[in-house]
Amino acid sequence: MASVATTVTTRRRRRTKLQRRQTRVAWLLLVPSLAVVALVALYPLGKTVFQSFTNQEFLALEPTKWVGLQNYTTLIHDTFFRTAIWTTVKFTLITVAFEFALGLAIALVVNSSFKGRGVMRAVMLVPWAIPTVVAAQMWKWMLDDTFGVINDLFVRIHLVSHSHAWIAEPSTALASVCAVDIWKTTPFVALLLLAGLQVIPQDLYEAAEVDGANALQQFWRITFPLLKPAILVTLIFRTLDALRVFDVFYVFFGNRPDTQTMAIYAQSTIVGDGHVGYGAAISVAIFLIIAIFVVIYMTVNRVTEE
Amino acid sequence: MTAAAEAVRPVARPASLSRRMRKSPLGRLIMRIPFYLLVAVIFVYALFPFYWVVRSSFTPEVNLFQTPIQYIPAHPTLANYRGALSANFFTHALLNSAIVAGSVTLLSLAIGSSAAFALGRFKFHGRSFVLYLVLSMTIFPQIAILGALYTTITKFNLYDTLGALIFSYLIFTLPFTIWVLTSFMRTLPGDLEEAAYVDGATPLQVFWKVLLPLIAPGLVTTGLLAFISAWNEYLYALSFTQSPNHYTVPLAITSFVSPTGSAFAVPWGQIMAATVIVTLPLLVLVLVFQKRIIAGLTAGAVKG
Image (tube, rainbow over all chains, first blue to last red; front, side):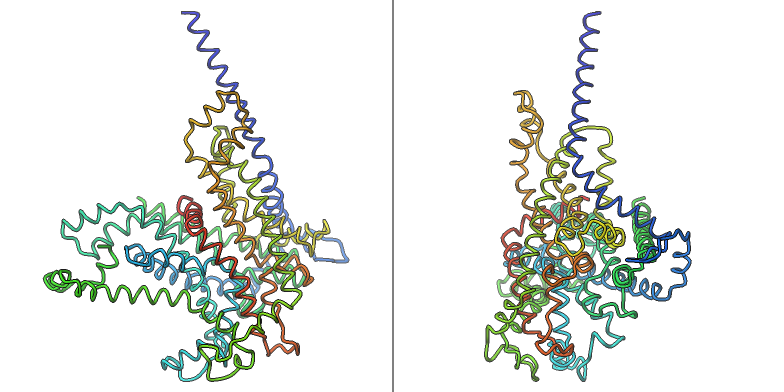
């Protein structure tokens, strides 16, 4: 009996020794990554929060002072920032809605088997792969007020009676940036949803067919519920991406105050004007706004799950 | 029959018509027409802008700024390409972007694969904490740390260097690389590794000789995604560089000005030629590694 007990304990001791060795090796392997994450993300994040409570200026002559919540109280009354939030949120709602609806339609089409399906999938990756700035330049030229192809096509099919300056006119400015983003990102959304569609077992549809369910019923009862996790992840990714939009707006409008996004306002405050402290407060605000959206999605997810 | 093709069929009509249609080959073809029309619309929507870039890049400057618009260049020319490639800042930018994106990719793979080894193949306290940390980093808004990075980079005299970009790009390539490589590591069976350990191999040997070759496809996938995102980055490049010699591709593509310096005469022909030049390598990468990229994107998004 005693000998059995000792072998068990030695074995256990050996196992914990192995475990300890494993833990040590694992943390050693993680050191470079954690160092980078600390250096490039956590330290700057902490520093940004700190800066947001100071009046730090880039290349300032006077030393930086702690100003408490002053930057934040200024920010609350900052109409430029309010406009920027509104522009960004409008852009986010419009693009995410269109990209989701179009992306789902495209995913359903490409999910069915037909000749040239492989080609279609490759075609869909192309807009995703090119730099956003390059896509913006392409569209800026297509939307040109006098020599742009969009005006030419729209006049030909009598959609508009005369050429428009799509980017310069305030009424169409937002729509034109949305058009670029929707063109570039819809295929990507479609690919993500397609991946979700392809894991739905085919025999579910066959069973539904036997039971006499029509296409619409099949979509609502089978496709939609099973696709929901993929839909949710896609929506979260797209929303977070859209909220930090910078490239398209910057290429189209520079930092024109009426059409700047939150990210552009922060960037031009920090790098353009050198107001590091105030810019940090804007950055923290952006971070919080994005966090709010994450919490909303998580809550929606939990509620619909129940 | 799939959902989309089914949706094309009128639902209210009695099934007999569609059944009759389905029996004859001609009927089947007719029923497929709306479907293929839809496919064609998607195809044109995705590719027409590219056609327009190529068309504009081969159209002489004179004809570009002329109405009515020529849909096919009447006198195709290579002048725009010559113009773009003779712009010093543009050729520099191609090299700079290759250096930055290449270094960021290699660094992320080297650092990220060792972290993925730890997170995917070891059981230890704090593992899930590290995983959550990495995951939260992948949704981290770059703008949130712009100010702090800007002052840090200036303090260490890295402003207006490629080093500043390589350093700061790790924030979006590394967490993603770790996340995807970990999911690749986890799918490997444990027997091979155990056999190696029994034979007295050290963890490092197991990593190099057993696991790394097995996750080679994962390395290709994540490497490509890291390369593409670094090649496309704009915000940090705009904020941390200044001299045209240190421009990356996205900065260069917005920096073409007309020889007269007029803000109204944008040299669109050259810009479109430059667009073709920077898009081609990406296009080749995407077409060659199509399956790998899709696997990586869905591993990063759907499983996440």
